[in-house]
Every structure is written in structure tokens, then in C-alpha cells.
Length: 371
Image: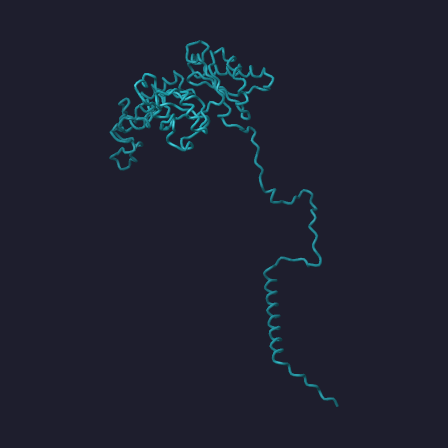
């Protein structure tokens, strides 16, 4: 008869290891169970990769990131060059005469348009006769109040291309008078230089500016802003400087320029005319920046700024929007605001400007100057 064997006692260290192994196994099972419940995405076995789905429908396409980006719509009329690089200005000598063929002889706006239409056809026909010009280069022509004609090229052409034809264009405009000068690119930026010595010549002023400031490209020789009689007994006066392109005073970077060893103050060129109304004294003929008169209210002609106009009615917004009496115009003494478009003084100046052609785009007749 065999005696049953008794299993040998397990050492305490092995018992502890077995307990730790069971505990780790239980933790792994719980972790796998949680991950399985959270990740519901079916996964293919690693031993058998799934082949990509075959597109059984021929009209379906796979959308990619590149297909989401919209391509810009091409412009049918694309402007390659700005307006300043597309203009050619012709200065006609007889523009201000009473010649029957002269541009300034025409009185109405429609007659002026008819005149420049003829000029546009004549210049284009002359340029097309050259072998280098295949199509009419200019698409627009307009006239300034001083009789100058400005031709504009198409959107994809630069005016520099027609620099070699500056001798042909005046011949086409000889019907209207002598073309003194043809400028390629009429767009200039004008500034005033105060304190320029009067004994200097205009050429010396131009050479000094070009030498001291080579980045300031001058479009024209500087000119005196006042007459020789007014400069006769002055040591310093004001000259006007023209720079090519659209240049602002802030982009120049300084308030004074050294001209022939003299420090000259740089200022903006302010244009105005007879119909320019001052917002300080409310009269016509000068802008507010050059006004030397006392302030005048546009509502009641009181000695104050218009924005300080007071009204006794509590519902009134006061200032320039006030429509309650007393209301008086400083220009005609009528009971209306000085800025009223129906003011007889304003209408008279407006009709005068139409008769002289100020309504046509052009140069300003006057500019601000400091004595």
C-alpha cells in the first residue's frame, strides 16, 4: 500500500512572487478590457493587411487637401501698370487762345470731349503707321483746364515704351497748336521749400537737391512760387519742387532740406481756386490751412468755430447740424448755412468755373505760399 506524498512546502519568497504575478495579470486584463471598450474602431489582424478599397463607381473621386483650395479667378481686364505709368501728357501752346481749333476755345463739356476724341484718333493713327506699333496704344484722352491733353495707354502697357515717339505725337497735334512738351508719366508729387535764397538760379537749386538727396527724383526743375517783383527786395522766398511718383511728406523722412548750404523748410503743396471754401472763416478763395482770418461760425456767423455753435433747444445736436434760428450766411447774409449748396455765392462761382473749364480735370490754378 502506497503512502500519498505530501507536497513540499513553498518558500515564502515564491509565494510572494506568485501573488504579485496574479495581481499584474489581473491588472493587464482590466486594462485591455477598458481599451477595448473605448476604442471601437475595428482593426485588422497584423498578419493579414487589408487591401485598399477599389472604386467601383467611375464618377466618384477621392477628395484631397489640394482639391479643397480654390484657385483664384483670372481677371478678364487685368491692370498690369498703375495709372501713373500709363499717362502721356502733351502741353499745347495755343490751348489758352481763342483759336477756333484750340482746345480752350470750346466752351461746353461735350464740345471738349469731341475735341479730344479727334486728338485721340489722330495720335493713334500716326503711331500705328510705325512698324513697331501693331495696335492703337492709347484708349483714353482728356484735357486739362490749361489746354494740356493727357493720353492713357491700355491696362497692360507702360508709357515708357512710347518715349521714342515724343517727336511724332506733336506732329499729330499740330492741328491744335504747337505742342511745347510731351511728358511721359504726368503724375508728380509737389512740395514747397520755404527760405530758399533768392540770388540762386533754378538750375543751382535743382543741382543742390540732386546732389544732397539722390533718392529724391525730380520730375521738373524747381520754380519760384512768387513773381520776380515780389522777390526783388527779399533775401529768401518759396520755391516749388516736383518729385516723380506718389511721394508723401512722411515718406521723405525730414522737415527741412539743405539747399546750397541753407536750411529750407519742407511743406506740402496745397492747391486751391476761387471756389475753394475755407472751413475756418467760411469765405471763398483759400483753404483753411492758409487762412489768416478769425474763426466764423457757418451757422450764425458768430466769432467761434462751427463745432462750438450752441443752441437753446435741448433736442438739437448743436454744432454744424443745427437748423434753428438764428441762421445766417457770412457770404450773402441770407438765412441759411454758409455751406448750403444753394447759396447764391456758391452757385455763381460754380457757374463761373463751368464757363472757364474748371469742371474738367486739370491743374489747380494757385497754391499756398508763405510770405
